[in-house]
Image (cartoon, rainbow, N blue to C red):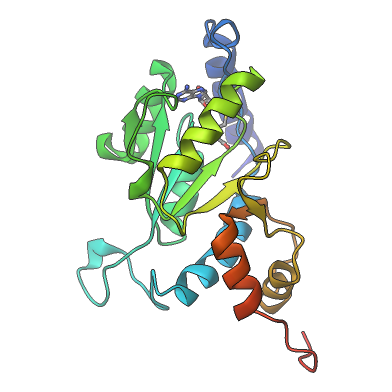
Length: 223
Ligand SMILES: C[S@@+](CC[C@H](N)C(=O)[O-])C[C@H]1O[C@@H](n2cnc3c(N)ncnc32)[C@H](O)[C@@H]1O
C-alpha cells in the first residue's frame, strides 16, 4: 500500500475510534485494531491443532470454488470493529465472522465483508459461542468486572475444544490454559518457520493436557 493510502486508512480508523463517544461510559474500548500479522501467525499454529483434532483437513480450499473439501473451521472475532481480523481469518481459510456493538464500525465492516459476516450483538448477551472452533479477542472491555463477566460467559458457552486467541494482556483467571510458551507452541512456531511472535493461544484444561501428551517435542528433531 502506498503511504497516502495507509495514512488515509489510519485516519479512518481514528475517526471511528473517537466517534464512538459512548464506549468508555459503557465500560468498553472503542475500535482499536491489534496487529494483523500476529493473528495470521497465531492462526498458522491453530490450524495445526485443528488438523490434529480432525476439525479441518490439510489443503482446504475456499467454499466459493465449490471443489474439494468444504469443511472450514469456524472463527469469531469477539468485538471485530471494522472487520480487519475477520478478513485475516478468511484469508487463512476460516469460515470467519465478527461480533460488534458499535453501529459505525458495523456499517463499514458489512460494506467490506458482507452483511452475514458481521453479527450485531452485545458480547455480554450473545449465547451462540459454541458455533465457533476459534474465538479471537483483543480487550473489548475497559471495565475489568465486565471483562471477567464476558470471559466467564465465553468459557461456559463455548465448545469443549475451543481455541481462544487473546491479543490482550489479561488472562483468563485460570479457566483456560495458555499454550503460548509451552513446548508445544514453540515447537510448532519453529516447525512452521514463523519469525514474528503470535498472540496467546488458550484452551480448556482437558484439551491442554491432551495436546501436551500428543505433542511431546521430538528430542532428536532439528528445526
Ligand atoms: C480494542 S477493539 C479490537 C478490534 C479488533 N478485534 C482487533 O483486534 O483488531 C475492541 C472492539 O470490541 C467492541 N466491543 C466492546 N464491547 C463490546 C460488546 N459488549 N459487544 C460487542 N462488541 C464490543 C468495540 O466496539 C471495539 O470495536
